[in-house]
Image (tube, rainbow, N blue to C red; front, side):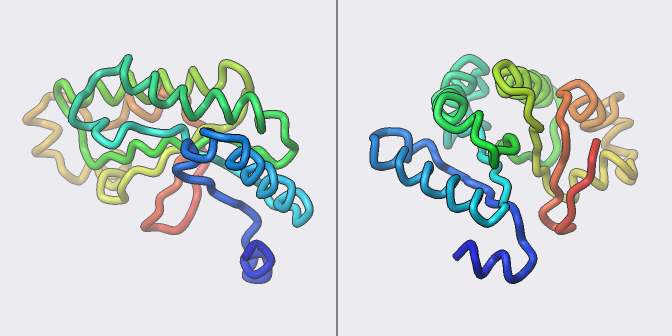
Length: 176
């Protein structure tokens, strides 16, 4: 499958939901095989940081960071020094945030980025919804900002120290 992707011009493998592969030696061997195949084809690899399926509901920073650590630690240990490992993807996708949820997501992103960079200073990326991006950069929804007396999302990107943000709907990557 990588050869076909390469023929189409792709050179990046995005591993998502890999935490289940870290539960046994066979899973680790499979991921190692993918990493080595990517090296043979000059692909880069990014992997997600993991997440609790109810991360947006429980809003418990410690619980979520523990869950993410269960993915981040094995990646660091087994693949962090692999020449094709390029960095991390935070899969906690959001739409708009304010109030307590905004405070939680601001803290969560900052803590995940800090955790990711604590061992390997690799890029960390996020993929918010395009509608949310329009709010951040264009501030076209002034009534929402005015009602809450705060810009929606601006501090998230600057304070979290994210390296990049991938806008799926725009099919492009922008450097921050």
